[in-house]
Length: 462
Image (cartoon, rainbow, N blue to C red; front, side, top):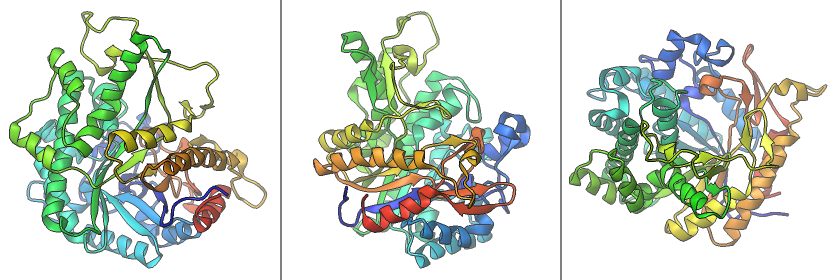
């Protein structure tokens, strides 16, 4: 029996835009807008209109999650749903009622709410008018939205998070064109990265004004950590991996926990003449408003080698001019998602946080396996026999438990996801849930992994 610490939290994660659907929303976010403009950009033409119908089904959905052993649910509040006027942060009364009901229903079912404030879902009005987080004015509008959330729901919500996967905002929207606004602008991505760090710190400042003296209430950030491994022990490959680590992980880890950006990264960006615009007052806000706990999303490692083309060649600046991807021979793959499966990274992350990040309290806020065409695994009783998902979780939990046994302060494991949800441009191409969602009927059924997770949660191990 592999056991976990007392009070270890077994949960699942989703987001507002991926679960709620567009029902009764006053505003569009960037994905609502993009789908309206270009539905063929989304897998099978499936957009965010209904998603998993959580807006209408949340009471039944939460009961199903409870049956699957989910004791905490990480989701997000949609800025585009809650707020009436973005400039004044006035409220949409119907949205306030909805989120109040969701939180109350979670608590009534013994499910602890973990609430995130931004999950790739910039209101499109702010994207078009100001450039979203390209603008420091939008940073202030976001902080005002955050303050409203803390005031409205903070009496019942103890665990708050400012952002989910800020690096993916850069990758998708400003570097590799898989999120709207589909820009390719390396220097602009640097400024957006800084502004998001500033936005997170300003939201934490608002939180601390309200709850700073309340030790039960905590605020953090959710980062997708992808440890960068060099292709070889050569100095060139190790240098490439170090720069990849600075960009992919430390650019958000260091300000969130240490209150400052890595000096190596600042020097690199300054030398390339792409360093962000910052003021001493803003840097003080980042320094003085660090996180209480860290959410870690982990799916796959990052393997790199020295670049074929020298970084100082005549080319547009992009963060990946310093390293090339490396495909390790013999790697285990999730071929449906084209991601390497490498559970040992969870151990490496645990030890990195222990040794280099103040051994801060943290938890796995996402870990899961996306598989296409799961209908092929449905048995005669109508249950998805997803042993591959159970094996995936067992292997990752084994590495995580090893890190915990060596002193890393991991507080919980949240699988992605509870109920099959809509995955942005990929729509429902890959399914991640412990619970199957037939998107044509919205009939939801627990998979084999859901029954296994219920036992895992009850036993606090496997």
